[in-house]
Structure formats: C-alpha cells, structure tokens
Image (cartoon, rainbow, N blue to C red; front, side, top):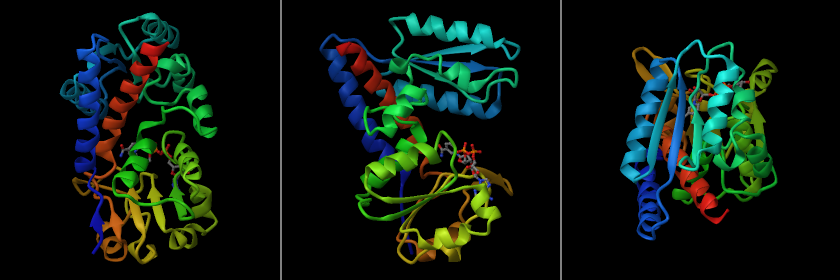
Length: 286
Ligand code: NAD
C-alpha cells in the first residue's frame, strides 16, 4: 500500500518556519507582513477559502485585510481598488479571490497588481521569472506540489513526470518548476484524452500530478508500480470530496499518494502565506 503524502503534516512544518521568521522580523522592529484579499460577491466556496486564509494569517502573525466588494462592481472600479492597494504602504501582498463576476476580465485585473505585491504569483512578470528560473514567488498550488515532494524527499532529477491539466494556475507553472528540477516533463490536457493518448502517458509516469477536476478520470490500474501520485483535483461526488484519481486502486500500485482532501489542498493556503512573507522581505530591502 502507498504511503500517504500528508499535506496537513507538511503544512505544519512550513507554518512553523513562517511563524518563526515573522516573529523575528517583528522583534527587530521591521513590522509584520500584511495580505489584502479582494473578494467580490459572496460565492460560498470563496467564503470557505477566505476563512481559511484569515485563520492561517492569524495563526502565523501575518496581518490580513479583507476588502469585500459588491457583485455589480465594474472592472474599472475593481482596477481602481487594486491601484489603491498598490500604493498603500501598509499592504505588502494582494490576492484577488476567484471567481469574479462575468463582466470582469480576471487576467486584466490580476495583471494590475504590482508584481512586488502579487501574492498568487500570477502576474505576467512573476510567471516570466518562473520560466527563467528566477525569483521566489510561484503560483500557490504549483508551489504546494513542489513543497510536498521536497518535504517527502522525492527526487526529480531525471524522473519521468507527467502532469495532467495545463491551467495557468497549476499545470503550466508546475511544468516550469519540474524542468527547473531536471525532470523529463510531459503535460497532458483535454486534447491528449481526445487523441486517446492519456492512458499511455500516465502509464509511463514515475511522478504523476493530476489537476483536471473530473472524478475518476485516472484509473487505478494505469498507475505505474512504485509511482508517486499527487492528486490536485477537488470534486464533490456522492456527498463527499474526491480527487481525479481512483484512490483505492491507485494506492495499491503507487509508492506515495496524496489523499483528497488532506493532500495538496492544505498546503495551498500555506504557500500563499509563504509568498506574503517573501514579498514583505522584498519590500524591506527595496
Ligand atoms: P482548469 O479547469 O483551469 O483546467 C482543467 C485542465 O484539465 C485543462 O488543462 C484541461 O485541458 C484539462 N482537462 C479537462 N478534461 C480533461 C480530460 N478529460 N483529460 C485530460 N485533461 C483534461 O483547472 P484548474 O483550475 O487547474 O483546476 C483543476 C482541478 O484542481 C479542479 O478540481 C480544482 O478544484 C482543483 N484545484 C485544487 C487546488 C488545491 O488547492 N488543491 C487549487 C486549484 C485547483
């Protein structure tokens, strides 16, 4: 049976490190990092994420400011709010909580956040740096996957890594991070499935990361004996939360596997706090 990659346990370790660093800066009189979250409307899933952000910030000694805006806000007014936070010296990191209303172009608004305050690592400049192997700010979920592998001492060098899903927040940045670790990296997506090639790629994977959002997409018997499986998917099915991989069958073949929930998820909000601290450190030396 596979060893569980325990995201909650890994998050505890990172949180301890962040807490210690924040306290040290405070004791030196440098102040504390402050994360501002812009939320539009009252999407139930967003409310859950916002709550977990504010709890994590409080636990780590990071300041947290929630800016709740009405559903009918215009893109212009939202950009004006971002501009206000960009110039606020008391705010060191900004996140715009998804989803945004349909009349708003998420990418246009997100790219208005100063790269030096970009808590999610989604600004084109930060993504460009990631591509070049520079900088310390990466999209939180991709960074969470890397951190989980690092904490369990899973080596990347020369490994066959297969990523399923090529979104801007997970698959694409993760592929850059894998290349930085000298993994041989394959990225699959909807067209891979349509070409009936998904199974053959998955079967080759020594490290498999799946971020699609379709329960049971990856069959347990496709998993290579001894593979490492990270399931990023979060799906509600039959009244519970499941990933994209058939967990029970996959656990019989994999050496390591993430549970869902309790795998990558708990690390994502921790990496948001990690980014907030790194941005604050950047502000202190600017
Ligand atoms: P997305 O919806 O932006 O993109 C989905 C990707 O899956 C695309 O690359 C698409 O081409 C691919 N895809 C769709 N159907 C496919 C198929 N049949 N075969 C192969 N590929 C297919 O994805 P996202 O925003 O990265 O989210 C993916 C999943 O990860 C969702 O379940 C989401 O809830 C979850 N997620 C979890 C966390 C976390 O913290 N654990 C964070 C972000 C997203």
